[in-house]
Image (cartoon, rainbow, N blue to C red; front, top):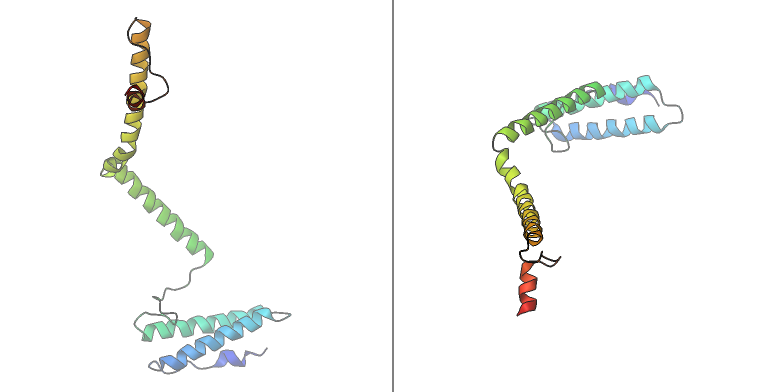
Length: 153
């Protein structure tokens, strides 16, 4: 395929509909270039550069909103994306560490109520066994006290 489609001049700044059409056309030409039997990398690179330039121009003249209706952000290379993700993870980890010493205690208290109840039940069983060995009441069976009370009634 020739590079004639890439030489299209970008329309006037206020002509957003024709700019959107150009973006669609450039996208289609890139697809056809990539799907050809022997894709020319230089031609694809030029077409992608023209597409990005058209998208950038559209967003600039549309208040920062791209053709897809979302906020325009410059595309990042793989290494830039990795750096951004790593920074986001580090920020999230720092925030989590800050919450652990601050208001994170309120969140940590909810699971510990369940753990405290389990621990209390375990301590009560241990105490009952100790009392039984000393000649006190029989140790509780596997049934909870409320179930035993219902059986007795």
